[in-house]
Length: 232
Image (cartoon, rainbow, N blue to C red; front, side, top):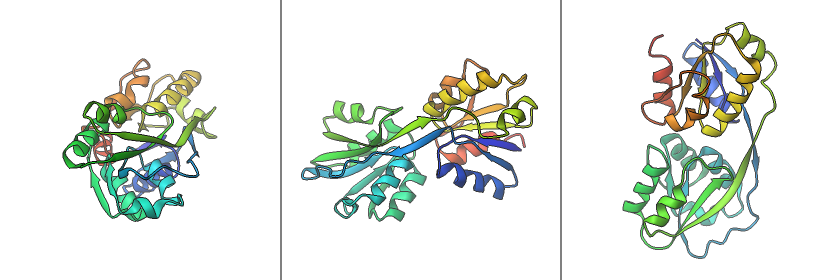
């Protein structure tokens, strides 16, 4: 299959490599540019755990000068790949919710003791982890570590390939990416849309007005691939 991968770098290239190893043609089209915006100093006096809902947050924390102070704390990750990235970055007590932000909140509720959970987040957040925790009586300190800026156009050649129906599927990993994808697809106006396969129903929702959107059984990449290649 010829698959368009739309997630931000460096994850776009990593996903493309996995697809090529599976024998597919992977086209890299990151639709969001990640700009790291960490504070120089985080208030950590009462922080007793860390939570993240994206690999981008792990990337920023791994380079932060206060990493050593955080590395020994319980680290709650939204999914297995984010958890693996956290372990590689040096976090020693990593737990994975293997789901979405509500699953992550449930994991924290049953695992966390006293103190404040530092939520390393992006400026634009699809889920509401802080709200889930607040309603459970858990104090959450949100620290915005990055923002995502939309690109203004497809990478060179993608527009023509879409018009020529030379792309079989588009993989979408977040609602924010889906918004940009929808804008660009409306501009391109291909006669026939490729299959659109999203990480979750929520992630694919901004594209639903353009045509059918499929989504993974669970919000992780193996399930996304399984959905994409079921008929292949």
